Image (cartoon, rainbow, N blue to C red):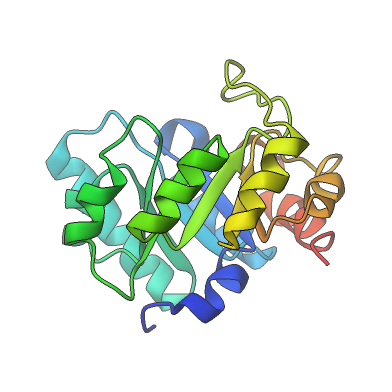
Length: 212
């Protein structure tokens, strides 16, 4: 698989599984990813905060190969060093992670760089630095991050003025996905709705079929 270009980012980020080992249990991340890929998930974002660096590299490298073989986008959250070493397709940085402008110096094009933003000012700075897409949320209350405030539709509309692809996250379920899509985002990211599902493939299908 070649690295994604800007033109296909929206399609490649249409439905993302965000996951670490804890969220995937009792399955492995690979087992969960295989199941949701079969249901229409288009990207995997590895968000793993607690592994030693050597172990994280081995996991990321394995998942990069796994996703490449299946022509799915593989993104690493937070860790520029691991993303580079594992040859990930994308790097996503949160508000409290490495500054975006620092990452942009080392993260090569055409690999993609994403940033979480909460305000129009943050979105504009991300655009100016060279982000390829923006993560926005929480769109709804999230069981994995209940402390995160809900993003107002007014602010979401302002962020849309950057014209960067937007990926919504936070409380994405079979019940909320259609409403989230109606907000005008270009992709959605889910954690619990996929990772905690008894049948992850079917859960992914339920989400994917509403992204029209």
